Image (cartoon, rainbow, N blue to C red; front, top):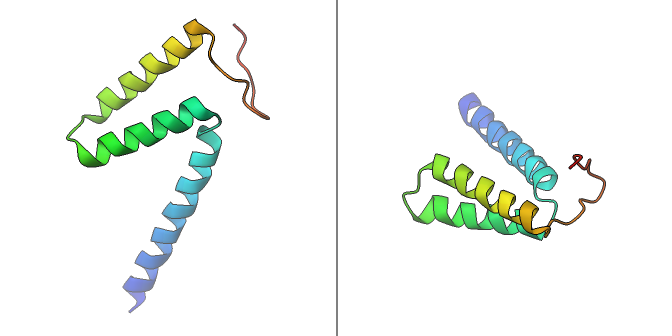
Length: 80
């Protein structure tokens, strides 16, 4: 009985932390789209997580070079 309660509370803790990290990371349409695409690829295709990271880095670099990045609300902008 006690073990089930511990497992349930750990599940809630993981859900809350995941929610807070998502709110902090998904600040604009590009990052939200990348997050959704990565989640779909990760759960439905056997994609290596390193490939997802490299793909996200490539998209981020392309967005930065093309000047399509939006100013994050309340975020810190890195100097160019």
